Image (cartoon, rainbow, N blue to C red; front, top):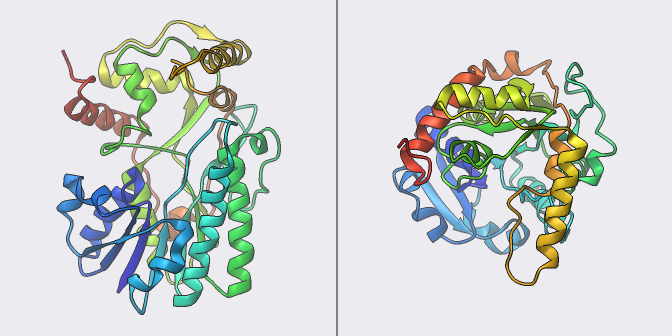
Length: 342
């Protein structure tokens, strides 16, 4: 049995490979990577057995598709381009929409299932913390459709579902919120925790966050691939809290005090916009010390979701948020050169 995994060198891709190697060691896993060195440079990747690297990108499957062999039994589509800035968004849509369609076409050739990892932000974004949606929810409108990454994922889900129906491909869409945990070897998903540990988080704002453990997500994806009659969409519900509560959990895990300065969402956005404008105005390679203004727009929202099916079908029983944060902080302090305990 052979399974293709896109996004193999990413945070979720890493944990999916490791989960499959534990639960199904006999499987042949095919890691799609832009180049083989992008896989072999990671110690964790070199330790995995039954893994073959195919070099290529999402948009040139016609070139590398023959290398996967005569028969694929499933595709995990984890790859995505995550960019929140409204500048130069064409690659985001090309990768996330057209790239996903290419995986549907590849699945049609092999008559296999696609488990596609989207995001809860396509349906679950609210002004208040007491709202929540299940898998039957409609896609979000504005302001979510003004945020390039989330809008690209909405369009990706819509285009993938339409094409899958046309080609007779079984498509299972998984919508996780933010994923955290040990093993973020590129230090991307854990960026705000790293800022906190380094004392580089200047303020907090009123808004929400919803997160799960990436290890739980990986197990759920594997279960979705092998389920005999999966639902078309699953939400992975985790810990929903305010931004302040989230960093209080980080403080509990690390002992590093939470920033005491609290800004309203409007004020934080204005600060980010001015900083972003200034850094793009000044000649040279100057980067804003703050996230993109779109990130502040998103941080002012709440991300409620729940599932009608995940517990029953995917054995979804997520670990506690504090456990995830504790183990994330512990891992970062072991491996990140600027997060070690003094």
